[in-house]
Each structure stands twice: as structure tokens, then as C-alpha cells.
Image 1 (cartoon, rainbow, N blue to C red):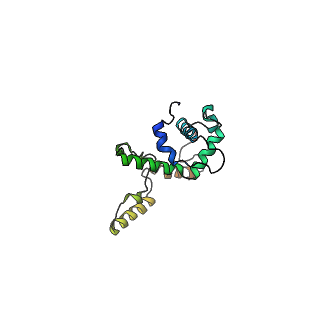
Image 2 (image 1 turned 180 degrees about the horizontal axis):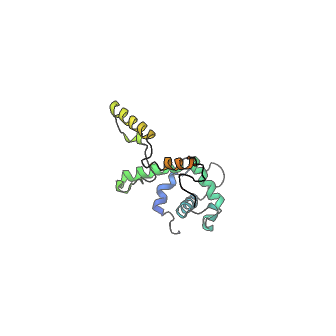
Image 3 (image 1 turned 120 degrees about the vertical axis):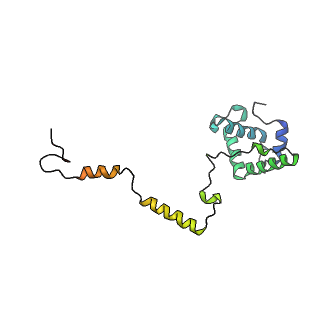
Length: 160
């Protein structure tokens, strides 16, 4: 057994939830499951599976079959149910990374009465029409479009 492979105790929990093919030889499901775990733990391409897991195509095909049949979802639910039945669940281990799980502000449960909503909408409309405080764009455009005085100078600056 390689580092990261399933222990016998872990395999006894997982094996009943993995489907076997109706035709053909019975595959080594444990080897394929360990291959899938290795691939996602390491983050390598399927083609880089070590030879101890057999042909990479077999492991990949088995993974695709399991994914299409929602085996991993069912397995997760079964393992959580088993842990809950044993009293081994620890919600202190549950975490959500706010950088990846964001709710839209409508989902936050913010309740506004109609007067507040009208006031917020008016503030938004006023902000949309507001001009920049420094007017830097406006000033720049005015300099660029100002006509010369006719004596060769621009913007009232005498040529050197």
C-alpha cells in the first residue's frame, strides 16, 4: 500500500457504494479508486498516473463512469451519514472560503420598506449623473478644443 492509499478500514466503508460492471471481468475497484484519489491529490494529468495503478485509460474510464452515475456524491452522503451515526461528525471542520463563495446582495435577506427603496434608487440616479469633483477631464477637453488667437499662439501663450 502506497502513501495516500485507502486503509482496509476506509475501503470497507467505500466499497459497498461503488458500482461494478454487469459484463466483463470484475475490475480492481480499489486500485482505480486509489488512482482517482492520487490524481486529484497530486493534480497531475491522467497520463502521469504511476504504473502501480495500471493503465491510465482504465482509471480515467472508471472515473468518468462514476462521475456520470453520481457515485462520488452518493459516496460523500453515505460517509457523512455513517460518521453522524457513529457520532464522529465535527462541524468545527466545516469552513467556507468567502473569496470563492459569494452571495448576491439580494440573497443576503436585506428587507427594505418602500420609502427606503425609493430613497436608495434616487441616490443611485443622482450618483449616476454626478460629475467628477476635480473636473480634470472637462478642463483637458476645454484646452484641447480652444481656438488659437490667430497670432500663432495657442491658449493665449506667446510663441518663444
